[in-house]
Length: 393
Image (cartoon, rainbow, N blue to C red; front, side):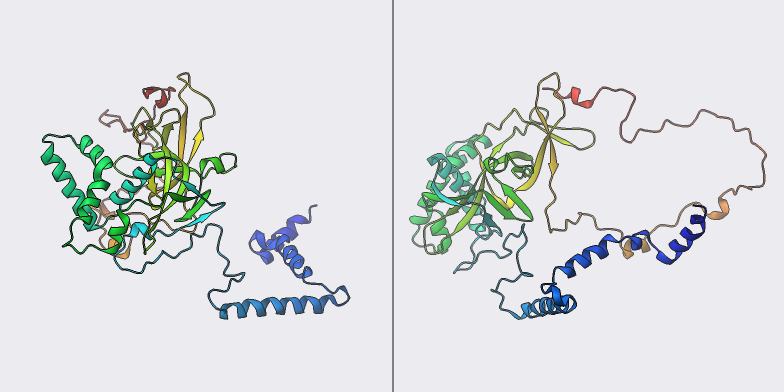
């Protein structure tokens, strides 16, 4: 084996990087070519004919009409359709033009309750983000505050949830002089009594599953997070496509969720590393189950390997990165403009004391005790007690 010391360096010099010496990529290519040999009597000619057929079909597929489905144009598994719905009139709010597609087994069902239908209709109206709806909302709040002086914000929100739809319908129907858009006349009507439910929904690079459909699967795609002043974490229980009666046939996709308690240190906690935990045993009491599909981010809930003595079932929240999307940070990377603005250092090279490497003499450095203690950046200490124990149950 002593001759290897001579041959191996020369082999490395000829080969270059180590992966150029691997053989499995060439074996894969040979298997791919052998698969084209349909006529074993003429192996070489069969491989050439198969390769020419594949290249020709691939080249000509780019000249087919856009509606023709080809192998290269096949949508990806996480494809959301890519095209927003359009309507016959202009000015329809973006809430009815969400990009996404239903997946899995879909079916038409009745609303589970009148309370669900009313809550979904109210949520759609209050999230239209249209100046006209915002005007009516502010007018409704002003009338409530004038009728009930000193009313709290919580009571105003309750009255808005209960009476805003009926009040808005009366304002639009009895104001004959105003020329309101067509979509407003349709959206104030109650949605169809039947809705389309599905097991899956694809949007924004995410694949959402309902809890019943995905709870037995290896991957959990039913975790929901909604960012806001208070972050809400929940479980997706139902995917609903709501349609309004009328000529425009306005459609909107809603997620019905079961929310965890959002109160910090009771339903949600944060540790010093920024990890978010939710209490799996507590739920949000207020009845607000619906959100827009476009408002949802996907998360996954992972249980801890052991249970604390308190018995609280804390679940760690893991954010899921959308597929096929590039997430850019708020702060851009260092650009040339910033490089030119770098300040000149206060200390020049001439002021730095250079050390002679040939001088082996030792200096007696005395410690005057004036150095300040260095602050621990991560607040780490020798105390073995976890910060989890400091969270009140």
